[in-house]
Amino acid sequence: MDWTDDGIVLGARPYGEGSIIVSLLTRERGRHAGLVRGGGSGKSRGTYQPGNFVRASWRARLSEHLGNYSCELLTAQAAGHMDDPLKLSALSAACAVADGALPEREPHPAVYEGLLALIELLEGEFWPAAYVKWEIGLLADLGFGLDLTRCAATGMNDQLAYVSPRTGRAVSLSAGEPYREKLLKLPGFLIGSGGFGQADILDGMEMTGHFLDRHVFGLQNQPLPAARARFLDRLKQSATISGGGTIP
Amino acid sequence: MLGPEIERLIQLLSRLPGLGPRSARRAALQLLKRKEALMLPLADALATAAATVRTCSVCGSFDTQDPCGVCADERRDPTILCVVEEVADVWALERASAFKGRYHVLGGTLSALDGVGPEDLNIPSLVRRASDPAVTEVILAMDATVDGQTTAHYITDRLAGANVAISRLAHGVPVGGELDYLDDGTLTTALKARRPV
Figure 1: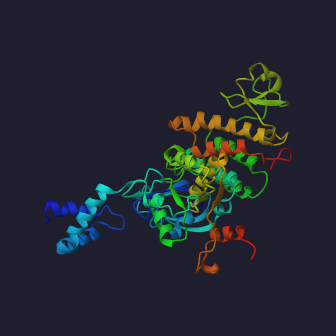
Figure 2: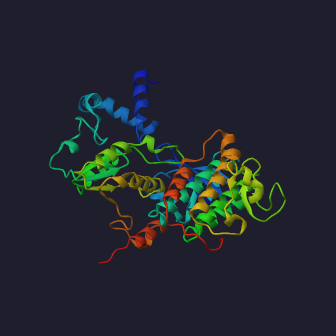
Figure 3: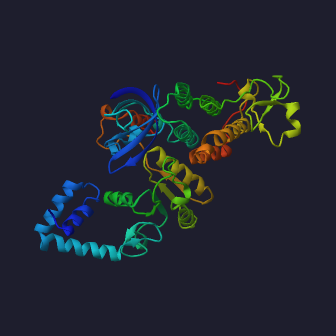
């Protein structure tokens, strides 16, 4: 059987001497791995860099086989961010999170479209906020959506300031104040108020990291990907994220 | 039906890069046919290399002496360190004869997929070497891949405290390359790294 689909390269690991096993996030088939013969050669290595957008043809005798990919590079996104450590680490982190979090061969079109949009947004200014929103979308698509519409305690939707680390529901400033040490901070840009400066982005990353760890990676007895931790470290060091502005 | 000794020879040869079972069979046949001229000298060379070649305690390259020939050579510029991923990269740069400084072999790159972290690489010794006042420049000669460049950025951060200039290899159009045949990624980086003439 065979099919052709567009996909985003999530990663590639060597197989044998010159071949690689590529993990793609495809539009219609979700995360799907396949063997690329000769993919480790200098000539085609550039195609299989995380974040690159490819048109992939997959072929195998039976659908449950690993199968062989042949890919045509459509957009070399990775190459555009090689010189920017923060964007490169964000790209690596997004690909590593998607690769570790998504089940194989299960369509997740919203995550695919979100990742595609995030990669395109890396060219612009507001991508850190988009990254946090993409992780929230990933959690929602995996069945662990956060409820940030109203306070879990009062039912009101004003002055939401915290998120319960247990339920993933928003908590208002007044209701959460006695428990603020235990609650996660809810950055304003996620509920349509406030800017997205460095502190807001870090709050958002801490929140999504908690739920990714609790609901996704923790269940697999895996830590959060090292690439995400490196991205978080870089975010903390970075002073280039501007505050204010509107949510992308 | 082959004897177990020949089977074992073929099996070991087939583990070498570039050789599969069939080509290993041909190589074994050649060795057996040219026993005096090829097989015995090869066996001798293998035994000698196995007994004498070691990893340089300074740079991580291979040589029969420790420190290796490059690290011990006083004619090489001690002020410039070239950081590479593997020993093969040292050999490639030496083949080009374009670099007269000293090397540092990391032993790989940071890789999210393969679980390679900073603790798996030869980075602490690089920081120590770069902190030597005699060293003035560190060249990051990593692959132009996401993992390679992620490693380069990580090393740049780690060397922030050392008083050295940090540079990296250029990315762009290869010598003899035609624009029409270059992939999009190479063209993008070449345009970004353009320089005045």
